[in-house]
Image (cartoon, rainbow, N blue to C red):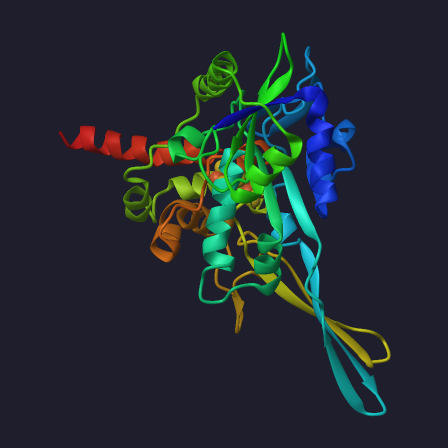
Length: 374
Ligand code: SF4
Ligand code: SF4
């Protein structure tokens, strides 16, 4: 069953969520990008703005219409809601020679995520497998996931960096949401709403939404089809794991390493990367200590530090680790690929390194070797 929400009633949806105790998080224009942050009202949404993306490029541009969700994805993924970039785990205080340890309390605030894209729902599902359903669940992550509600927005446009169609993750959400919206523009601005959970059904009933008519549903489908057609980047998935494993010593790794700055941007913006490190700090008196968890990256020199120094000393070995983990060994570990095709690592790489082009380079190299043998 699909429903119709008028654009002028979007605020009512946000108000209903607030009345139900949810803090709202959603897209907004900040620092010349569209970022997810605390949302007070529909007026905070990036209405009338879009993003232009290419390898190593991202910029905002005015749209000619009043679309609320007329952009693709920005550098800040939803993972920071469930796995914050930096969080204190515990603190310890010494008094009269005795130490007391206080664990950081788990969050209690319910959160509604507004504007989650299909590829991002797949990324959350990938992190769920590791941080919620794996052998070592993360208490903060599992608590926040249990307290979250997801309002998805189906993509009606794509960026040149997107390749979700290759990864079967978009452009429309098929699971993992409470409500999904497809924005309809002129002549009557509104949304086609799909219900994905009992919580979503309760919201639709609270708002008293009417059923969407057939023409509106056809317009919504046409919008998603348009996004699908706009996606030109591809990644051939069927044999990518074997392809990378066959080429672990290929000279291409040296070539890409000559461009890679080992800056870790790709892992910071990636919605599935989940590596963290621990940092222990004390104050000058020695009476207070804290343990913090913060995002780490396989591109950092000290990431593989064991006795005597880092195992992966070269950029070549770090890029190889990142790409083969994303597209090959992730499958061995977790049963799925580690990439959802959101394109963030392509847009936000200062060197414009594109993982789809790197995979193609290995494939083409094998093809030309085959030809030369004949
Ligand atoms: S590897 Fe790149 S394209 Fe794939 S999910 Fe991560 S940021 Fe997105
Ligand atoms: S691939 Fe690009 S974003 Fe990633 S570490 Fe290298 S230079 Fe930085």
